[in-house]
Length: 247
Image (cartoon, rainbow, N blue to C red; front, top):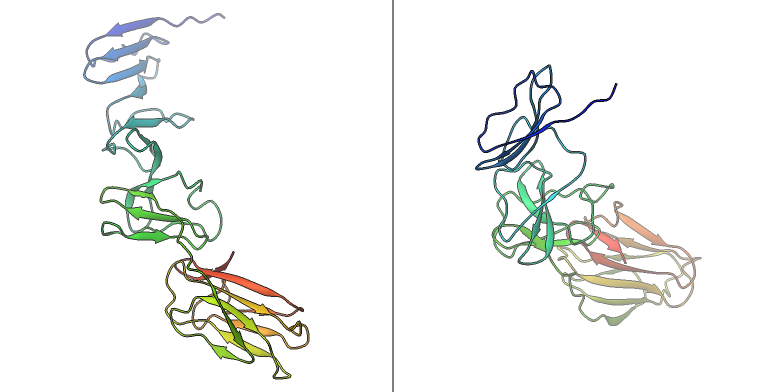
């Protein structure tokens, strides 16, 4: 059986009669809406009215374009900021709901270790970073993409045995192990985001005398420590806000 669709146009908010099954009705009043009539009742397919409860959810994402954040939209909505040319998502976590820039190229919460949990009451300029190094800054309205933390220049520091690094230390640890046994390099207390250091075996005896890099109460990629156990090995670490990560 061939079915035909009749299209009607209205300038008020009266939906099509239920008895007119298959009729599409476009409302061009204060809001733009598209209805379809069916024997079981009317269905609202599309609506520009914020918070419309009866809209049939589309199977595709449409970004709202404008210079100010949309209001009255559901979490997961997309907004393209025409002022900054950045794409934002209305992201909801257990603490907050806020517009978050997607220009960093991350699907929030898409893989272990990348689920974002933004502060509930951020201050202007506050930076939030994920363990993988992605960063956002609160501009008072939304979380915008923040540039990567600038790593200070590393200064070579030779050590010959186990060493506890001072708070705030940034540099290149050259391990010349002459103890005849394993050594431990303990990372600084209270590291700050972007703090970076490297530990390097320069005598080539880490295979016989392993070098343990201890986090000093802070995890190193999910573990309390890591071990350099082969000749001339090294590890390059940066603190990413909640733990040390290799770069």
